[in-house]
Length: 249
Length: 249
Image 1 (tube, rainbow over the protein chains, first blue to last red):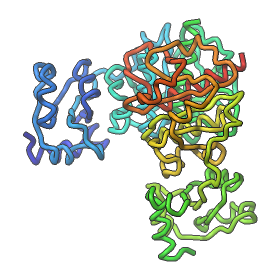
Image 2 (spheres, rainbow over the protein chains, first blue to last red):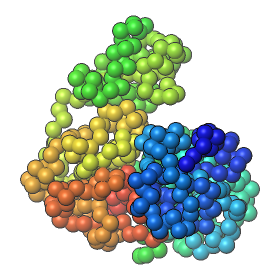
Image 3 (tube, each protein chain N blue to C red):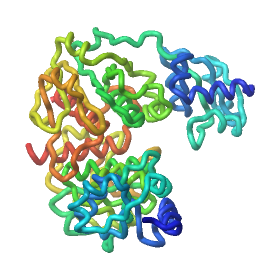
Image 4 (spheres, each protein chain N blue to C red):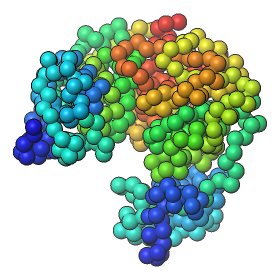
């Protein structure tokens, strides 16, 4: 059951300012919703279609499932093809940077990423490679944007995403600061040691001037062909992979 | 100048069946349009806004630029924020697989990729790493889909994309066939030698049964965290990067 006022409230969560005002966001699809139920996040409400309920016996012991029709789901979904289940989830209470998990590991730092799909793919990739935290500039796209959430495929439930003034943050950190740049040391010849930050810049403009001065080690992914640049999520993935292969070898 | 009938014709090219019928597709944005002008593709028409024309003196010697208003561009564009220039380009004459550029190199083979953005990002990444050709199953999304073209950032002008029955093709090839799978030899311990095919599968279902039997060397990207899978464009990029680092070292 979903009331008319609930329908219009869930629809309002498609907008960033309403998400921020209420501290709530939308997660869709059985894989992602299940990941959030098993995480530290607090579930506010779950809506799902009748045909899915028998398959969710285990989940229904943990959370209340509100049955809705396909037509109702279509109204509240952010997807052109809704995926039978939609959850409203509370923003995490603690969103500040966890300094303890900066040491003895690598953390991705994003400077002005604009595309929600790119941010989501970076979160998913970071989760695959066992990274725990992503630090974003204040002008990076919101992690609770429905397109970001969708692209993380549930990984947002496991990766901490913090927003901060990057200049102030980088001024204070003591671990090595690597930057993904079009010129610099080849990533294939870089010994990443055991800890550091990897800064990746905006899709069109790269790393901002304010942040560039904190990059102590410019690193480049060698180019063999003619493309002018790589997509930022692709660059992030190649950094994650190289760091892990470096630790293994 | 653009007539009403031209506007409706360009709009009709937003649809796959019309693109196929006329053998024409849309490219937008100055970077991408310029790359196509400097390629072997044939330009059918170019429309651009008045403010851009003075900046395109060099191009206007090679091709005719039809001036249109922002309102007209908005009508024919496939983008929510049109980028001042839109070109209509002819499909390439030769789209069959070039067997000569299969030897002594690596070629990406895509089995049932559905997301146009993923295909576009793979084409852009292949171009960065100096690959020349991508071979797709017949059910892979169309390379001339506007979202694919946009995501290639001009790289579609340089990378040959062929569609074929993969089983028939793989039956005949003599070079090693590697597959991106969730279990297999670690990509970090694989010596890729100097030639081969890298098969990547559909976003949800992976490599199809029919194609799986031709995979002689299953390769996996080691997982260190909890994500269930990687985005296919991310996997493709890590393969491209590892192959090139392997050749360098």
